[in-house]
Amino acid sequence: MSHHELPTLEVLIAPFVPGCEELALSLLELPQPHVPAGLVQPAGQDLLTAMCRDQLASGGKRLRALLTPALVTAANGPVDAARVFGAAVELIHNGTLVHDDIQDGDTLRRGRPTLWTQFGVAQGINAGDALLMGAVAGVLRADVVPLDLRASLGGLLAEALCETIRGQVADLALRDLPQPSLLDVESVHLAKTGPLFSACFVGAVRLLRRGLDAERAAVRLGKEIGLAFQIRDDLLDLLGTKGRGDAGADLREGKPTWPVLVALRDVPGPEADGIRALLRQATQGSPPSDGDVARAVAWVREVGGEATANRHLAETLERARVAANLAFSPDSAVVALALCERLARLDG
Ligand code: IPE
Ligand code: IPE
Ligand code: MG
Ligand code: MG
Ligand code: MG
Image (cartoon, rainbow, N blue to C red; front, side):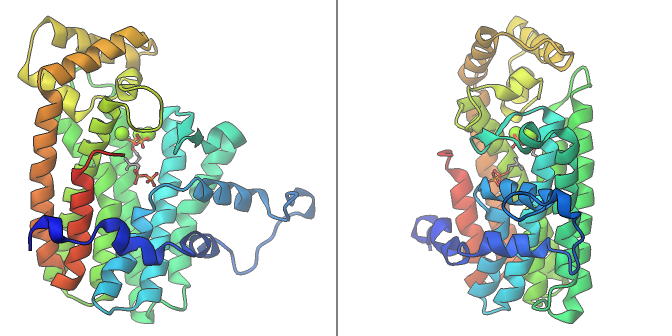
């Protein structure tokens, strides 16, 4: 079957969209909540619940919520458990985004004001913490998750979060390096985005009880998808299609991205030196002018940074397809292959 005959990812995950947000929020509810009566919000919710609701209501693609249920259902596995697990991964994803927007100083996400700009940094940290730990606690107490898998799936989530945090630390530390290399950036990409995707795939493998070889392939699949995802994210930033304003927001923040670094490596010269200086200054608190950013973006595209990144994305996705076919039976692999097709397109 050629790639083009696959059902689209959107079609494969659509059945699991309804109710997914409510399910995720239900995992966060403590068995016996204690909220001082004076602090209950007008809508009858406590502030923490209101913040978590607000964050999840901002939407996003919900990929991490829907992948595991789609994979598991395709092979006739336990769908209710898969939905709980996917919801938990989505909660963790959102918790890391809440913290990430504080760390990056970003005021917009998903086209809306970020949580910390509405509730303050301190409460933003609390909301992120609740999303992260609530997800793990939720899976550990979920009745629909087979008892013999609860600790294993809870542990999987906790490990994935620890790895993601390592990636986030490396991401911030990288901005202080005078000359980050392409390899540095790639390893940060892998560390901050791979683990949660790996968790989605490994969770599905465990729920389908496919064994350790499949699990190892699922880890690899998540890594390749994470890499592809970030190269694509970097490309979208370069093209200005991320719903966060103009092209080159990463450059403005002093974030070295894959297409920029590959251009700096392949086409040394005064322009490259100028962009290195611009990145350094941005991390030292003097953001470049809009004109400087626009010129840097145009140069990276002209000298082939965009084209090389596109090729690298295609190669990464090809390795992902190989891993998908090792991790899953053909029925489920279709879901991962459709994800690869989706990531190959750069239309938002
Ligand atoms: C954004 O992930 C954060 C990264 C890992 C780059 P997504 O693009 O999956 O975010 P949402 O959930 O769809 O907004
Ligand atoms: C997203 O990283 C956070 C995690 C992967 C945990 P980025 O900072 O690169 O993503 P955006 O650009 O804010 O979505
Ligand atoms: Mg960010
Ligand atoms: Mg970040
Ligand atoms: Mg990014």
